[in-house]
Image (cartoon, rainbow, N blue to C red; front, side, top):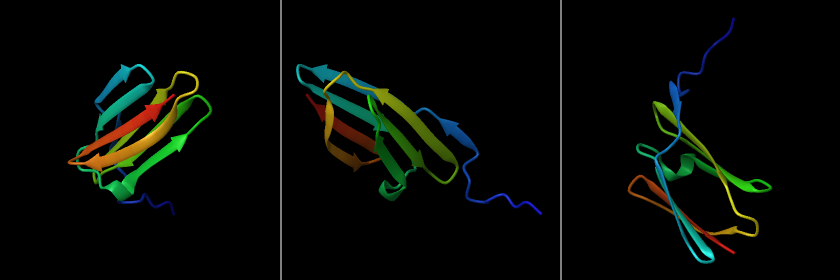
Length: 88
């Protein structure tokens, strides 16, 4: 007998994202409505960053390809928005 987890989100979406670059700094702001900070996973890949987040009825997923040499330097989650800073 197969059981489906009742907490599994019904849909997966790409979050609304704003990316700004100023010289050797990239700022990414991602809207993650209904998500708690504990349900956000940020994973550094070879040339990109993968962001996964889950709310009660929705999952968010995005892969950000970074220019060579940029590294995640700071992150903050506040009012449903994830802000990440990358430096060269």
